[in-house]
Image (cartoon, one colour):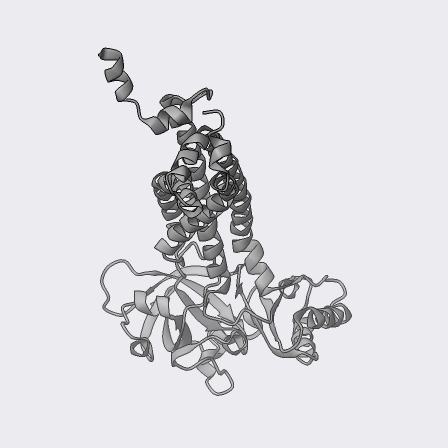
Length: 421
């Protein structure tokens, strides 16, 4: 009675599948599936991370940074002490007349760096600690060359408004005892307590121990890293752009061609100072984007490797399981199962570890990418599309990996499968 009772509890499919097959016990099967789940979990996490890295890197490279970066060239040798004022003036004049140049300006602050000061700015009667403001000196046509967006007021026009020249020895002597004009970016106006940009126009504030009048407010221009908030800027006009100024040129033709012409002009007027020129796009890439681009490439390589390893494991699991289940599948076909029924049965079973891998991959990717994105002031949203897309891609790759095994077994003749039964 007892042997009959024990034998009656056996599952026929399990007995047929495991018969005379090494590693057919449940512990071995669980170990194999656990390894496949772990491999695909890591692969899914890396795929999500790669997608987020690429999306964030593309976002910061294409985001609106408050000025038109395309076609801008920077020449930093302009502020070299070896150049006298006459050479600087001739350089700006000659380069401005160069074919392909649409605009030219000078300034102490530029994308990726520059020279500037930091001071406290305060409204009359304001209480509390005054905000820290970056003081930047700019030359003629600065805002036009950068294509900055004017939100309220006007830009500097020293030919019409003498008080616009508020910096440098010439300005101080000519405007002694008078209130010079400045411009703010939107962040600076907001920190001073102006809810709307227009509220700041005409207001007199203290800056670095003196008094100045706000005549214009522009949209924020992100000259620094996308990882940090935009600084509060106060712009003052100074002929020549101030100490250690840099020339910024907007081109209307191919930047590389125009750059060659500008360097030729530079060497003719200032042969003692070599021209140090680069495009603004290249400067921003070298300063802020290069590391993230390299990191995204590394993640891509890791994701491809992890998927390849996962597919090898899944293929091995599929080959092993189909070998164990040949007789079971033969019996199913004898009992009326079609090829599509068998294919569906096998694919569902082989893809279960991949679906389970998302339980591992999704939380890892979410925590890692949330932490990484939190370091950016300008960042994308961690959309569920990245997670769903990675999972769907993993399923497609896994299905393609095991489809040949499933098809081979599903198409096998039942008589051949049961021949040794």
